[in-house]
Amino acid sequence: MTVVLLTTGAFFSCSSDDDAATDDTVVNGRAELYASNNSNGNITKYDVKEEDDVTTKTFLTLSLDSEGIFYDPQEDAVTQASRSLLQLNTYADISLAENGVNINASVSGSADLESPRDLAVNGNFYVVADNADADGNPLTADGRFFVYSKSSSGFTLRNVITVDFNVWGITFVGNDLYAVVDNTADLAVFTNFLNTTSTTTLQASKRITIEGISRTHGIAYDRGTMILTDIGVATGAGADTDGGFHVITNFNSKFNAVADGGVLAVAGNQIRVAGSNTFLGNPVAAAFDAETNTVYIAERANSGGRVLAFTNFESGGNLTPSMNYTLSGASSVYFYRE
Image (cartoon, rainbow, N blue to C red; front, side, top):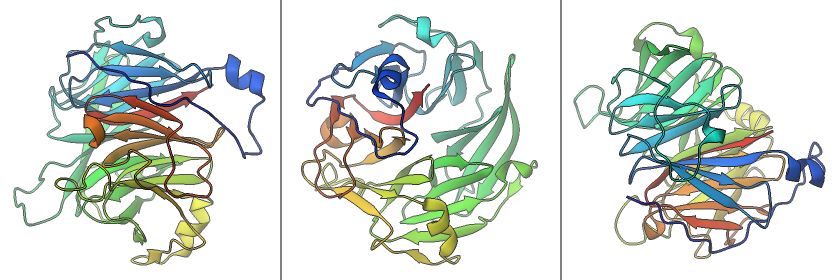
């Protein structure tokens, strides 16, 4: 199946970050967004370094359905979690690949996964959030994190951690793993997550509710700012238009100020972007570039899938995306800048 790309808006960028690079640095350096999808499992690369001239490439993989994606600049390799092959696959020399070519995995993991949803990386450790029913009882909420170590020979499953909530998006902030609590507006953290090396059940170090969110899925973090998406209702009437995302600046201090089980209020803490102009229905994943204050979204429901970007979001509200590409089954995004 061919990915259909349709540009419906130009890409713009701005920066209010004190560490922002000069215009020449932004243009001459790399700024790339990698996307996975549920429709055919291919990898789509968006070159966004030129603000008014976004270019795309699609690389064909053996996976038929992928979710979770990561780019490693040291190896020039993209890793995906395959929902059809139930394993991690890494594709090397991705910068040399031409548009439309078939790419083969340079290293792979064993087929341990059941329902992979997101991928977070810390050093040589690759953590997959898997939302398959862990205990076989649909009435109890649970999920698992599969922890792999990566070497030149492939991925080795180190341990599996079961948690007492449904999982979806995950991201590392230092050595702490933040995880959205699916079917809720909650966010959980596991401090020093990788220190747990055995296969076990683990309680979150802390869990709070993010006011204003109906059901969270996507998560991204960069330079003190956290992005959380809100998919609203997953299916049915309005499912393709009721989504949004929240921007939480100075996230660490705000999160730490809320007690375990407490609520992070919208007022004074969060910016919400939502409305008919946003094309947000089921935003299932996010990425954030703090250098240009750009939020990237994998939108799953609207028109069957889109990859969106938002700048100038400081006032929140019903914003029009600065980049808008259709991507059937869009499921995950990862941003890289050098």
